[in-house]
Image 1 (cartoon, rainbow, N blue to C red):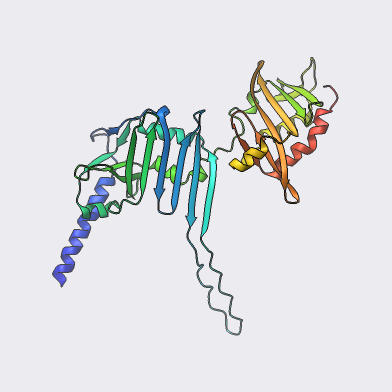
Image 2 (cartoon, helix red, strand yellow):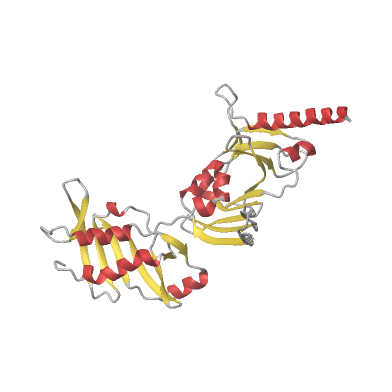
Length: 351
């Protein structure tokens, strides 16, 4: 019996040692990374990622930006019991278990997804472990092949990797090539991009309304609901600290703190969500209560078109821009001051 325990203990230690060795980063003296496959980033059209309770689908739209459909099921959770009550005190109420929660989000991706596509130009393995037996596949977390990443391109090509355990103490991941099982190799790959996909709703969610910083705009035009009230602003004067100031677009115009405060609130707006296809169809016909168009040296940069729709006894606020190409949702508390102060800004003397 003791011999069996000793034998299996040695076998376990050897297996862990193999996994640890495979996950070690290369030193400068090691051979260079091995190029496995190459795809042009601009040709990547779809990517899918499935692991445990998380599914992520990424699809390129016509302008080159990527939509992300993110789905994750948080498992039920039972909090630990409270400590025993003191003598003579009433027993504490046991905590209520929390049911499973499904997180479903659809959003446009930020630059992290584009950076990830460049990981395949080429895809480099930090280490090629090669073909292994079933026992080793299990050690690397690859036996069941339930976790998978897949990529497709506009010219009909594709690539699939089965995903295993993360490397010990490093940002690496064991992966198994798809294909003929007799030749499929186990690889050790960089896990950063894959981890960004798994946490895409936190790391890859693009909350920008426009692609530029408002400090880069030299002029702006704000228009009310009917277009009757409008004001042009200039963004050319600087204060004693070198900060640009918003003024009326006229000669010898004086800076106004109200303009800077209002534009600052506009600049700080960020998306809290994106319209669903059904909401998009309704919003396309909804009138705007405010439109702010930004220019740089006579060239249009983009416009922010603000709308609102009934939401129970309140209002839902939305914004559209060329950069978005769809309507994004705004937090009411952030945009309501912009709406409230707009009439005063548009009607201010000097414009």
